[in-house]
Length: 505
Image (tube, rainbow, N blue to C red; front, side):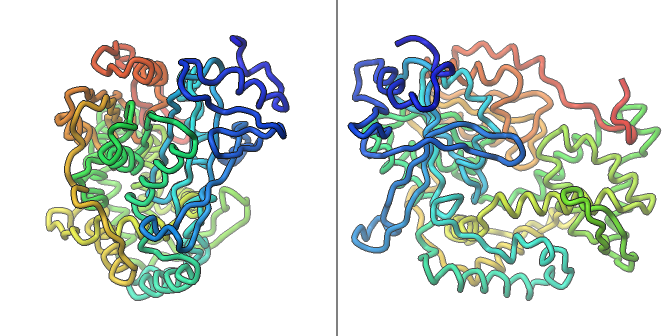
């Protein structure tokens, strides 16, 4: 069967998959059973739609798999993992592609629609498998309502260290009624991924990790090298990195690079001023306090709200907007308005971010990972005191982890990935959280590794420019060094805003 699955009605998908799979003569892929239900190995799937909000959705097949909460106690409590299969469009190879989400705390099923287009060429002849990491999405989620409720976050009283610890303890106590929080680490997720592989009846898989997902991918490849065909690392987290320790310095470097673009743009500099100077002024005012409440419209609901501008609004906005150059291009304008005493845009955009992040992240899972794997190695960096974030993130996590249960990590957890596994690492030039030097650090240990830096891009770059085609070529050939990546040179960053109308030509 050679025709594309695009033209096959969803009701006929099971029969189409049965005809399309196993093109290499390897064990069969998805097939319809006697009752017409789609089965991939031992796992049953039914039609579903993966949604990332709005009109962004992807038709898929969804399933579940029950696994031990503690893999070392298989007769103990069980949890259910949420899975999805995005079928190949044509004759499928025997080795599917696993997409591993970031965070830690993001759902793979919820994140995938945002990168679906980046997989368009890969999906011509390979299925995509999604597994919500335990503690996220539909896999026994470890949500902390106190950290996602917008009104709670908007209350200045909840910014104190004491309030933060109380919220963390309340979340811990509630989650412990149904979960052992020590069993939600990267190592546990890696074992889940391999159990899914076994149940699918697949010998080897291709791993695509994004951000924190690159840590998971490297740990899987180290633990199960015989079952790892290739690895793509998008926005790389080296195994040696104490995740969170460098966030303040990396953000500062990214802001310097972005603000330099405004200073070298006559329109931006003339109309909005030097953003670094504006940032210093706004930061000083917000930290001093005493600003009257500001009335603004909620960008999602349209309701009028009133709030006192605080430094937390600014720090959160700078950090998250720096992830994507298209958003960081607006920062000179936001800082200019705030420096003029107009805080409406700062508050509106900060609230929108808080709402989106609260819905997207499973805070409890993120704490289980960070507290088990990184917090014990945190160190206050005196040099970070003058940065926008300072030691805020490190201090915050240390206080939370002091009251959060901790699991274990593999003895060789910090060892760099090595061996002959084919690895393609990709980074954005302006990434504020996983800068290009991290990718360099990883591939220097890999004889079959290569690192590509995408000009003008930020965090999570798999879908940028011609990268989807290079991604597909690598998965097909597993030869990163043979890729002709000159097409990436055409990528550029979005110009900085020069006013409310955007940038000048």
